[in-house]
Amino acid sequence: MKGMFVRAALGVIAVSLAGVAAAQVKPEDQIKFRKAGYSFMSWNMGKIKAQVVEGSVPFNKDQVAAAAAAIAGIANSGMGQLYGPGTDRDVGNQKTRVKPELFQNMEEVGKLAKNFNMAANDLAKVAADGDQATIKAAFGKLGESCKACHDKFRAE
Image 1 (cartoon, one colour):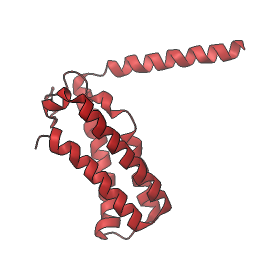
Image 2 (cartoon, one colour; image 1 turned 120 degrees about the horizontal axis):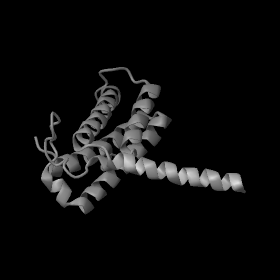
Image 3 (cartoon, rainbow, N blue to C red; image 1 turned 45 degrees about the vertical axis):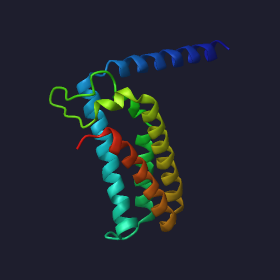
């Protein structure tokens, strides 16, 4: 019983420290980290597009499933925490294309993010099955969810 209490206490401490660490990420680093996440998702989306949509690369079920899993992993990683105070504008050497309106419409942003996460999870699920037509449809829905946010909250 004592061991279970100690493990629970250590778990609470670890979670608390993780929250503090996330809160201490400088705005410049928040921008850098979120840009890296989106770049990695974009690279993986490109692999799926080339194999499933364009056919410019031969279809490889395992590669597509891995790319879809990576996208879902990043989508569910809590990237919303990287939109903290001061990240609505360029900071240091980090440029951002986020419009300030994003920070004024958090309820709408939350809905868009939820739709994106669901689409990313659905893509990962169907990609694991390997049916190209189903993957293509799910990939299209994921792209639509990206576009919905970009159209409103991303500057060109």
